[in-house]
Every structure is written in C-alpha cells, then in structure tokens.
Length: 149
Image 1 (cartoon, rainbow, N blue to C red):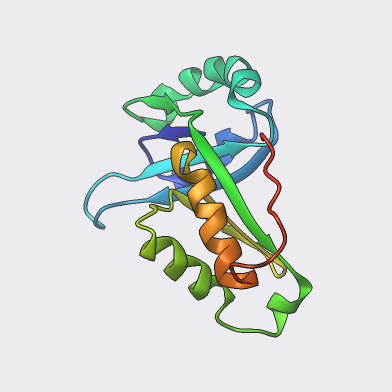
Image 2: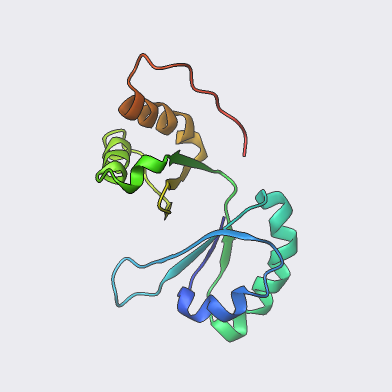
C-alpha cells in the first residue's frame, strides 16, 4: 500500500499512468480543513508494485503537490464473501464491531454487493481473522486456513 499526502480528486487523472493494477483507492482526512491522505492498494505484492510505480508517483509530485509517498508492506487484507449479503443488513456492522471489540484498527475498507474487505496491520491479521470467523461461524466451526497474499 502506498500513502500519498493529497486528495484523490487531484490524483484521479494521473492515477491512470500507474503501470500496476490498483485493487483499492481511498482518501481520508482528520478534519475537512486539513490535507487529505490518499491510499493505493495494489493487486501485486508491494515488492513487485513499488519499483514500477515509484518513478511515476514521484514524477507526479509537481502536478499533484503532495508532500511525500510512503510505502507500507506490513498490511493484511481480510474479506468476508457471500451472496447473502445482498439481502441481509448488518453484515458490515457485525464485522466492524467485532474488529473494534478486538481493538484492531481498520486502515482501509472496500465493499461490493457480495464482499467486504478490510486492510489491517499484518501483525493483527491472524487475530482479526479468528475474531471475524468466530463472530460469523462460531467458535466450534471448522479450522480456518490462512495464506500469504
């Protein structure tokens, strides 16, 4: 994931020049008066994506006006998937409440009709997965398999 200190509004057009498929993009601000932070999550591991994108992002600095670009590869993605989400409200709330109860910070959220994905610190990934698994399937459900990336 790369964090860039500027709004995605400024970044939309130039983002097309990044030579790596982007999985998720978000912008956030502590308050409406401060500068934004934009985050890009790539489909490829950062070790592959960063060399391809660093030159492009750095070349955009004068046009966009961001302060710095920071790369973070110590993140994990946790997703819940199911067609039933279309007709059942409260699935996202249950996931977010579960992570909050575990004191796991959500760095980024991506949703679709059948999937909710969150980005968390890699060190909290397994704890997050086990807590969400227990919340939706119960403590006695089958063993959970984990995979890298």
